[in-house]
Image 1 (cartoon, one colour):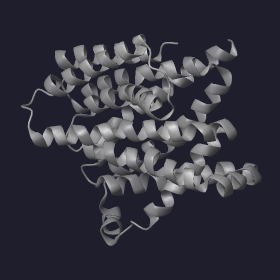
Image 2 (image 1 turned 60 degrees about the vertical axis):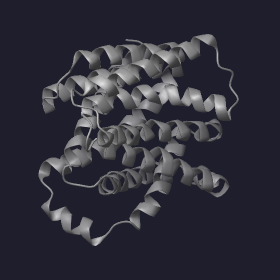
Image 3 (image 1 turned 90 degrees about the vertical axis):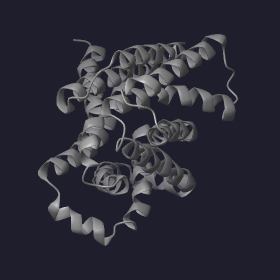
Image 4 (image 1 turned 135 degrees about the vertical axis):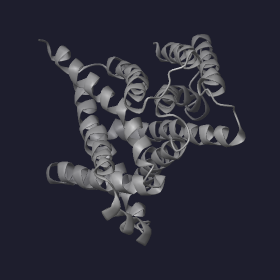
Length: 293
């Protein structure tokens, strides 16, 4: 088996994990606020990254912190705190399967838009066509896929959910110069640690009082989100980037909505409507066109 083929099962595994992360979040937000869940998710992540990076990369890590501490804080607040609070707030109302289709698919779309605005990248006819298709697919999902009457409160939660891929796109654009200078895993670890610092000051008596009362399923969801969906998945992701081209690795993210919708139906008994399938297919087609070289 070639080195490339060895990475395929690993990449499929982490897309399965990421697809199921929406289910874990959907369950956990029944017991915790989005802020509380974000705190409990990223404290163990930051500690684990510190244990992985600091003993072996102290000099490089400290040099990065001294020079780019402000960028790391911004990355932490957008890519981790902002992203998760927006997604978790949205999942208090919208279905996990719908979120798993919208959020990963819109990440590259919004990166494309922000690249035009801030990086002055030139939009091509092909990419604009992909953007239009993705927008049509998103409209179909939001307007028809839920099966419920569209009211302002539902649209508000959809808009909050859309802030998640916007935060990730911002994280990607701002982080681009940093990952050109430092190892990507080091940047991710630094941003995570930076994100946790303000979160520590938000731990209050209500959260502490909740901890002993949380059911085991919530603790399992937190552990799943922290160690498998974040630490393990990022380590494998960056390992795969050393073995394969970035476009090849990135193509595996198309599996995240598939697994998210499928497992949401099986585990949460969420309905998969024709509008969700049609809208999802159009949305993913647009994303594919945008990502084509």
